[in-house]
Length: 320
Length: 213
Ligand code: HEM
View 1 (cartoon, each protein chain N blue to C red):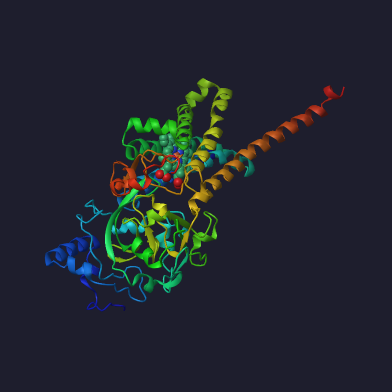
View 2: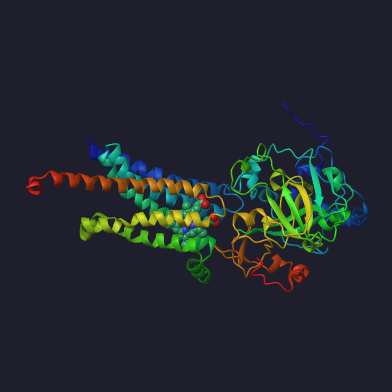
């Protein structure tokens, strides 16, 4: 019989994640260690991290923190079992089922293009210099549903500064791993593989933009884009490219996978905008997962105060 | 039991229950919380799938009975067609009720502006007269010829259903294309039959003494 030794199971592992997190927040606030956590350097990403490993040294989110929200978080089960990740199949249930054996170690991230310090990093070295923080963001899918997710990650700007982009770096292009042996969805030409996404450099440097390595306080489950994914909360979900292996700084606007798939339906910017409908369906409302009635979609997914200035003189109907 | 009794007492009741299984499974999953994170979307999809499947099954009756030489299959067609309507009705009700929650403005906008909703809605509307005229009484009142003519619209309904599906998917056309191919086969069979009949008639005409004389 296989009976796990119970001595080395942390209480966090046997407590429902939602209860646990709120409890943890309470405890941390009560003990006044929020500040301490914030200055605690580095993180302890274990060498053989797998989905579900607790991340340590994470600066916790608080509703009062910049960009914070006290909206109810979407349950862990839903965040991890209702996914669009076509590399593992086109149905929402596919990624959780098909990514079980996906190997995220060893993992390298190639940084190239218009930077002074191009390099190929081991994931651990890529992340090591930074403090992980928790950010609770809304996620709005182009299919008109939404979630609230407590990500763990690093502001992308902090990472980009390390590479010293040149003055020619006008855009950042991200690429997902291309490995049909491990990613069965890539054996069919549903999209042009590998998946490519991009941001304008000012979007990439915006303090809201982050690279996530975890959610709900743990390393990313494979189906959520392990080990490293982009999170840009004012854009539609498909901009949040998953399982990133390459970051390239370029002068010209990259052509993204979805722009290739449907140029009239998916633009480069893909900002959440209730006034610009998808050609085939309305973007005016969304269903928050777990809620019954649809709710109104907010301009820039509710982050207009932070990001509207990025697009001040742009015709958002044209640059959709 | 005569064949007639066998069909009425065994086959039809069994088929009736079998046709309710998809609905029972949806209800079961709903009850057990197995519809996933977005249950309304899931119900929308499963009822939509079954509407289209029942339409195709109904359209398969004629080829099946001719090719397999099972003429009595025709006796099941009405029930299958009515189940297509039943699942369409569920699909539509789910849309009006759970998905849009009776938001009439939004529904009207959707039906007008969204091509895939427009065509789905048109298909559903076209199904209603077919359901209403499905009784023996109505067949008699209309007369066989007119009834048949009216019920030919099921071809357009099925084509509409497939286009509805093709237009609503984001990118992966795989599933709707499978339905498109199946429908093409079922409609192609009818075209082929008609051609064959025509050429048979021509041959008969050509061979008749009146013509040759
Ligand atoms: C004969 C009539 C109809 C047929 C055969 C049909 C069939 C289908 C099929 C096969 C799907 C896709 C299911 C899947 O993705 O697995 C679907 C989805 C859908 N149908 Fe219909 N439909 C019909 C009528 C309607 C009507 C009248 C409406 C609304 C007024 C409607 C609204 C929708 C919507 C909104 C979806 C998308 C569900 C989602 O993915 O969120 N349909 N339908």
